[in-house]
Image (cartoon, rainbow, N blue to C red; front, side):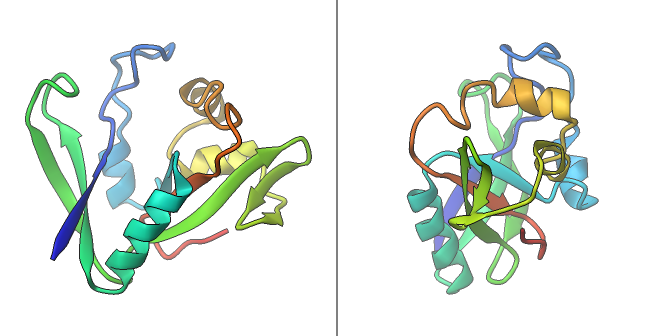
Length: 146
């Protein structure tokens, strides 16, 4: 069976105003306060999540034990068939589109479900959500969907 890996940051990135401070993402995933993560390359993640939900793969949630890319990775949760989902996310001048449908979700709600407050969300994704025309993936860790 295939295993796909999804890295979860345990500290804020060095470009964030809270650089180096804990994100608490792991505990927020277990408490379901962090319902999802947003990643680039929707088509890739859709293919992977579909394989997980077909029972052909699993998705390991991991973190770096030390410096990213220069330390051991540790798996803290494995998601199997029926435990993960994916939705397409686009931002346009009209607002957020989820699965190609105009939605009424606000950036504040999206941030909260991503385990961040609005300020941290804006700085985390500064220039990344609408930096190119490719769709983003909302990878869900719960049954919640938009």
